[in-house]
Length: 107
Image (cartoon, rainbow, N blue to C red; front, side, top):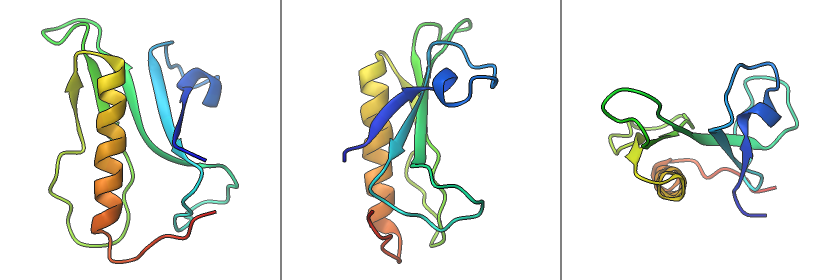
């Protein structure tokens, strides 16, 4: 199954997120568990910036953090459109996984 996106309000109904927050999940990779859960792995997020000099742009962030060497490539930024921000999350995530010394099992 490919990476998929959900509204943060659907994932965390009481989390205080607005309708422009989206979370990405990778159901095919199993990471080390630090908490008990059977859910797919959250890999990143995007949200619409409101106000300030970046108003109307989409912020993106790859949120996975795994053991291994320091990862110095970009893990967040802004894009003009939601689709571009989503592509940046996936691109950063896939590159990040390729740099980890351990390969994580796929479901």
